[in-house]
Amino acid sequence: MKRIYKAAVFFTLLISFNSIKAQIVTERRPQLFAAFTKTINFPKTELEKIFTTPEGRTIKLSLGENVGFTGIITSSIQRYHNLQSVVVRLNNLDGTVFGISKRTNDDNSITYIGRIINTKYADAFELKTDATGNYFINKTKTADLIEDHE
Image (cartoon, rainbow, N blue to C red; front, side, top):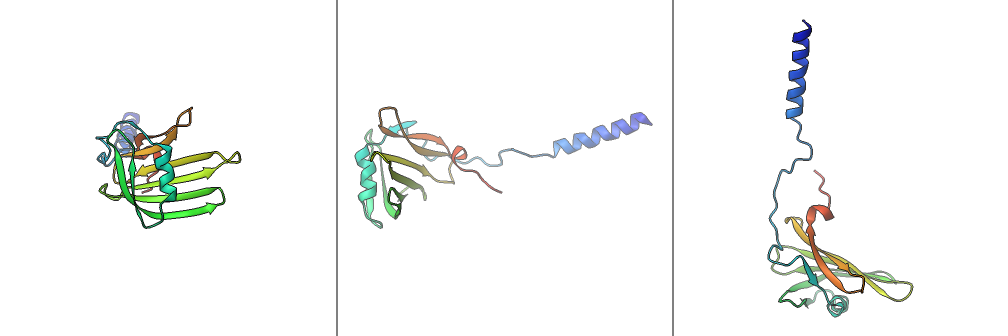
């Protein structure tokens, strides 16, 4: 009788473990930026142009290396005296948005932070800076930037 009981418990556990689907990727999203290099320089002059273009206007960003983005400034908000945030809806990229903020630090230096992202795709760009203060966008995975809630 002990063998039948152990066998029944074993098969019950086996069936339970086979039906668990935790942390299994259920979809594969395509890559939007597959044709782009991993890092692209982003000149400060182009960053500043984003903050001086009025809301509702079209902006063209030239990043060199035959890379550029065109979009419409959909939102430009001065949140605090030292923080301005802008959202650019990029043309021809299936609803991709570029969200960027400009912070004026206590020493009057400027810091930019931003992301080019579309939740329909597996890749995105994140604005970074190097040790010398030069800005660039770095390709990353969308899953690393946002958390899906089902």
